[in-house]
Length: 501
Image (cartoon, rainbow, N blue to C red; front, top):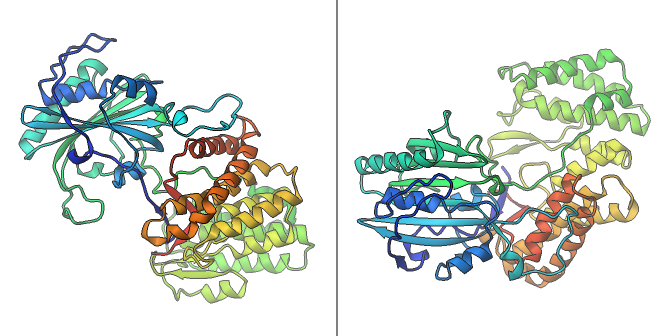
């Protein structure tokens, strides 16, 4: 599969990263419900740490109130890198309570965009101070399951006093398969979770393994982007334009006999209904061949629409017809004879359709509404649908060239905000690579000389996209990316740098 490399600032829940030990604080009460807890217990201290989470509390305010706490922005943990949202910085603290050490990290996130999505002209550290608290994470190591269970139950009881009975339903979060004694609470827009986290059976040396038993508790607000209801994408959280062109509209443009479309529509319905795999390949290939044969003599706009339809059908239904798992699957030769480029991904153990019909369709019809949607699909994929980095590592180069050429040629295009946003993403990749975002997969020094100009060009494209206004998803996504660069924060991921590993 394609791996998009990530390097992430970090969850300093290791004692060495958290500064000096502080003494337990005196008992305090929750201002809303007057719930008194005892900070001389690990459960009470954990509850106090979580109750500090407040909407609108900025990093600057926090630093003023906690001048001795270190503010950090580098972490290599999988948890912080991929599952705690796009945080700006975090404040780390450890407190010794009896024989226990309570480790806490308070995470701060970019502020909400202004109504007009005006990108700041300057920023750096002044902007970072406006990041707002969105999540608090607490961990307490325990020596055995018995003491861990007791502490987890005690934390649950403390939280229930303030936030009511735990909510029903399961949890879906990184590592939650190895949690026990779980409880989830909801108070208005705030969600809190506590659990006993056990080391997974695969052992501490496995990638991403948690080697120590601990009681964890965390609370978060919607501004963090965190969810415990569905597993987040892994990784690649950045916004992407959605293909909104109705397939029926493409069928209407192609204007072929409805008898040719009917079997293809059935294949799509079967695929979307998640019917069992193992349907005959011929039941897909034969109607595709008839459809494409009828499309061959059509004028370019109609033929482009027909190719787009064929592309969508094959992309969605291929694996349901025994055409994915076997690199020598019967029918692959027939597909290739029809012009479908299919490649074997050794890492994924599957055949991948490289969207050759979509590429052919865009060559025939570049500037219609359908052509615009196909361009956005190509840009979003870095012009490489192979799944094997067949287009090379630096997909951002092709994106920059194609996006800027398109914007120069069709400056008033209705998709200009989306194209500007994706061009900004491509330039941002150079900034990220120069700062080590690809880890060992790329030589950061190679991109250093380009970084300053790339940042300037990325900001220009993001700013152009943001001018589309708050009603545009591309504008909102562009503002967030531009704010991050203006704040001088290091991009943690690359989008179009492809690593097949």
